[in-house]
Image 1 (cartoon, one colour):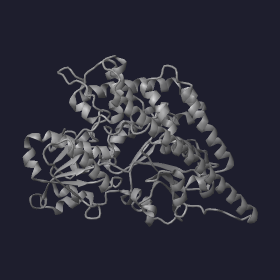
Image 2 (cartoon, rainbow, N blue to C red):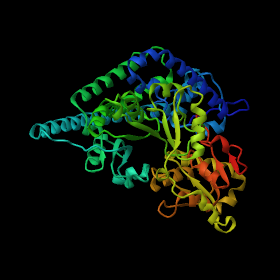
Image 3 (spheres, rainbow, N blue to C red):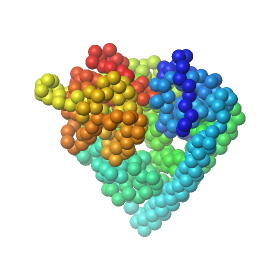
Image 4 (tube, rainbow, N blue to C red):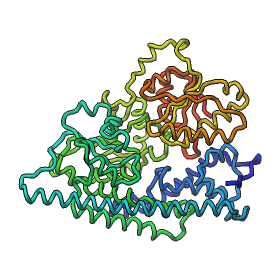
Length: 536
């Protein structure tokens, strides 16, 4: 959009925007606390947008903090403006409009009608997908009833010892489980439960695709008629609850409510997971459940269901591990960090956390010890460590001879993050632009980011600079391990990847680039004083 805020001496910095964001989080926490009695009666309310903390979903405080800056006619710094998402920039413009410091421009109308068109398409596709999910559930229910009526001894699944919760990838298929749990194939009595689907526009298509895999199940395989009815009922209840709070809504809350209608399918499937988990457990009776959790909607729904599940006897008790598959930091995405209310309500299941390394476990334990709740923290077994190369590999490297790459960028799963770390790095190095322009800049992509997507971000970057950009070389994941990529680089550059802590533990020269006012680079507390660390 052509409108740009004024940049003057007295302007809001990234830290000040973060302060505003935290104030609004405290306000939300107070509102949530006032509703504790409602939650005790019906925990399903935790799946509403009032309790949403995922900053990439329907979280409200992020938009509200920026809207209020505009509403109060506060000028923002260029650093802050650069890292705002298009949605956050629009919130800022609307704030200035309410403050009567700018008029509605034609470009605003184009943006609004474009977003409205996308919302209509998204809502329609979501509704169609929800209908297909219901049809698949009905088909499964009918199939099991027919089989049971013709065979009294019909048992759809054998009992297993371990249940692994995963996100099913279109490109990985059977290998999706090993991506999250490296030693999965080594275990005998186990099965994987897909609660979400990546690279699928329609959840129903993901359910159908995963049903062809013998070692992967979904809640649709176990859903009962009553579970389906309750899921549809609760979907309507959650939306009616949100609409009932329309009075005195903030800008962010209004946008959030409207946006949730584009995700009817996700909410419905999460609710089916929630209601059908008791049937699933009754059928396969696992002794241990490994719950991969990033505190997203489908993770919360399953965790809540597991937290309230009552075994028939002590013999049938189930151990639920909340599995954190990346290095943990209290400075990371806000929704990755458990809150006191969440741990009390069951958002993290039994509060039994399993982490990747000792440093992550210590950071988590320090946090949870302040919450006054029962919990346990442990390091995952060796086979579950997702970065296979041991740090001892660094002893096999001569730091002078083998570090042939000057700069290597390590991206996370957010495509825009790659754009920002490249932009902010080049901007920081503008005085030495000619020097870095002659270098080869290496990029190691997150598995969720394709090289085509990365090239699109680079093309967007090229439009901002008069001079030609440096040559970018992509490191193929099959070419070498992530640890080796770190060891081969003189300077490892990170944005939102918590693997920055691995690079620090290896003794690498590390640069952390801040890409949002809502969180800091995910550096663990003990690494903040690392001498070879630079934060931009």
